[in-house]
Length: 198
Image (cartoon, rainbow, N blue to C red; front, side, top):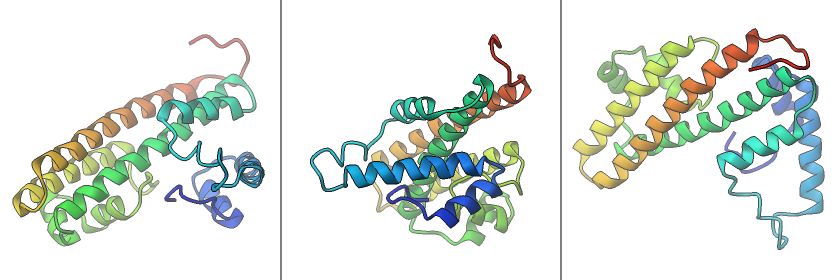
């Protein structure tokens, strides 16, 4: 989940199937990644070139690797992008959590007006979950970002610039996830046929 190493086949299969994804597609992607790593080890001269991928590069690679009809390929690209942005948001929330001196989940739940289980899920798990509707998840994440930023400022050991940087990144990620969600909903309504116009 950290993106620092290739996931095991079992872990990947479990994650993809629980999200309702195409297991064979992702196992195929994993196999290609494994082959690529074998050809270009991380400690080789060109092996580290793909470590810091920009969002645009991730989308381009997803598009290059997509298979199937145009509508299905589009959904896969959006899904990959959603995962990428979710991890970015999780990184910001995690950083704010530490800048705020790791407050208890109970305190955060009281401060944000959300349930303890929901707050704990957002803090410990980077991706959306089927136990929460997307709108509810977005509200919890947004409240959590603001709450953690306020607590980080009150603690006083974090510089205002560091707090604001994470808040700005988190807001951008939240806005992008909302856009991606809309695109995915629209894409799901389109038939999987060639020649579909936007």
